Length: 183
Image 1: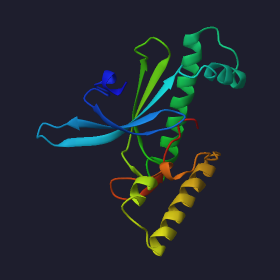
Image 2 (image 1 turned 90 degrees about the horizontal axis):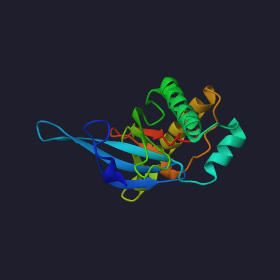
Image 3 (image 1 turned 60 degrees about the horizontal axis):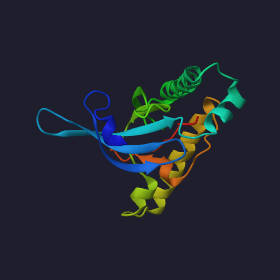
């Protein structure tokens, strides 16, 4: 599916998939620069309309919709509002930074795609494959995670999806949490 999306965000191309979950799939993306270097980032793709129970569940929580477009528009609006809330509350300090969003109709005509460009990060699972933490680093990691969770609480949100795949390290090695897709 990812190659059929290219390019994304104008000049970015999908590379490889490195994660998936209930909300979508995550890919590495890159942009070629004029000097031959590459910028890299992450792309989360949320596909609406794939899950047959999705509309029933969303409608039960948010009311009935006149048509499919109204239904998708409401979900998209909710997700965009959530991303805006995370950006305003944190701006990349404790949470992986949201960089851009693009909306598309699915190429098969069934549903919609939400493409979210994110700051690139390695998950705790990936980091632990080639690294072990000292006791001091483990304490610091725990404190960083607690600070991120406290930041969530400061804007009345309880983070429901804490797991090693959602504890991420940015390019400078700072620990952050990610995956606010269903928030």
